[in-house]
Length: 329
Length: 310
Image (cartoon, rainbow over all chains, first blue to last red; front, side):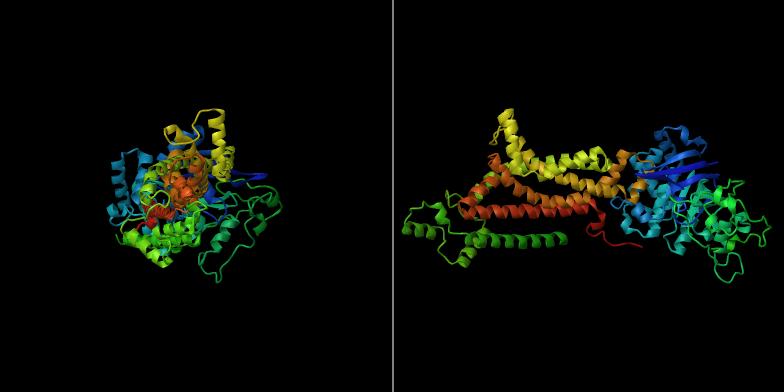
């Protein structure tokens, strides 16, 4: 296991108000060379989960409980300094806004070289050469010259490639891609996803792929975790999740996909809205929007049993259309 | 090169406007012979001096002669002691330059680290103390701070000389008087621009590569935060010269500022004009330097690097 997250809760302290928990009891695991997709609507806690894993939580937020095991080492047993060291050697993140994520007054090459030096401790000269190599590796034409240019001279897609070069410096075991392609247009999106898949295979990285786009999940992920209001509600292999979604929320999401379930004539939607994180209902957070909700749903938070957190899961059915996931792109 | 040519042309036009404005305003402000000559001077003597200094000619004629003189490097002569005005001013330049540079260095050395510190510990007691000091330093008038320092360090403690410029000890109080106000301004600008930069996504990227806090602040944040600070530095150099007049007077520092005060008081037109031209040149040069620094710091405004590729 490259990453194993067990029952992690993130707390944000707010001055003069009660603390909120944007991430509640999240468990995930990821093998080397595999892609795990974390799916959910905006504000469901996906990004907060990523920041917690990467050790990039904002000041007031902290991991309140749970364990994080990165490539065999429990981060909780390390001092903050050692934890930072381990993270910088083992994991890297790519975020949505690549252009904003790069320093405007530093050359692309400098920034990648800095990451190389941080992760590998190379000399300045070696780091520069490695930066040029990495920029070439992520498909930037003429990397030698491009390394001397600045983010404002790059297009969004090129900046995202540069960000990926920066991320794979020092061969991390885990890559977190938090909505890394959301801001890009469809063709670029496909190119960047292909690049990430290629690097994953070549470097044997585990990829935690965070998105709200189920179409991309079907194409690129080995397994999926569906998040709702800070919890993982359903976790399964991509094939079985798409063929046989069991949580009502997952079913709703899939039904809302254009053409996902085959013949339905109009797009389905899930009634109601996501509850705000400082006013979550007592039981299952999805209960107010759930068609199958009963008394127990509004009073008791469902336990997670074999990756599923629901009092009334849908029936286990044989997939009607096998291996349909290639059609969602 | 084109950039430099345009800048130079603009600087020249600015300079010409300053010369013209100062020339006419000074001549409208009264007859110098009324102030320079004793009250009981008879009319004949008075008109003799007017003729000697060329004040009896029409004003446009005086102006053309003056500008023609300037072209040949002739700044006119001082009415007061018949010395070459340029010579008088030039002799004072080193003292003011020394005071100005020292004050500016103090301002940078104090202001930037304090501003960074306040930004890093935003809303903590450190921030409040630094910003409290900044408000204090900024709102304290120079003449008041100068006199206060003299009271404490010269009269009470007897540590530092209160006036003159003979030794390095003489430099301490004037430089601090002049420097604190700027240090306060720079600290405030550094703080706000640093707070801005620290919240930028690229700072999170730096953090994600495992860069430690010191490295993040110095190599990733500071070059960005410096851009707005450098911009205000250009304005400040102009202010610095203005405040130097007050500070030099308080500490009897024999620089341009003090020369300007006496020259204005005695309507010594040639000297005042010469100083004004010098101040204008200094400010123009400072702003050109800031523009240059700005481009050096921020590749987005760098000349010739504007084209977006791909």
